[in-house]
Image 1 (cartoon, rainbow, N blue to C red):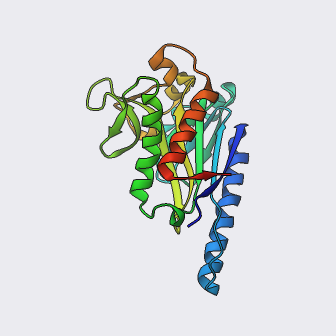
Image 2: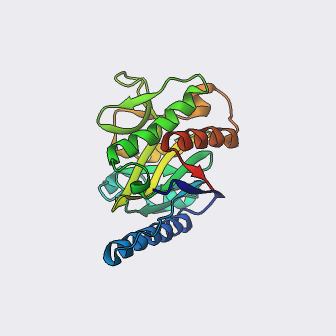
Length: 231
């Protein structure tokens, strides 16, 4: 098992450029696994953890409904936003500045071959980060992500998850609203869920946060939960 993980903070990066980069890393790991299986090798597979922010963009998962994008292409252009249909699970979501997007590209054979638990650990990293800011968040039964006030009329999501996996290799990941402009969520039915709203750390605490500080706290929790060795 190789628990070494190459960490990169890509800063503000175009969605398609980052997606292509993810795909290349993902394909490289799968190629090693395929060669190991065919040639009875034991070559070590690499792991990656990418943090970034994206310019305004809406992404629709492979099981999503395009009707959950409530505006047309002209409106998107006026708001400086783009739209991509992508190969992760889940429905539609928004990415933009002030949001921490995390892309773990991991060979789960190096960590834990339980996809359900993998998702729960991603959620837990955000739950523990929020706890450091005095906020008690939780999971919503049957819905991935991290929420506040589940089961009430005030239920709201602060972190969305959408992932892809093949042969225990993961890509895509989570989007954690820190100083996010939440008005952009008004153009979609977030994750296809009509009866719950979205929130951000800034909204919950009533102040702008240091996104670098939040990233560092989140990174520590991911390292501890997955027992990663960052390189």
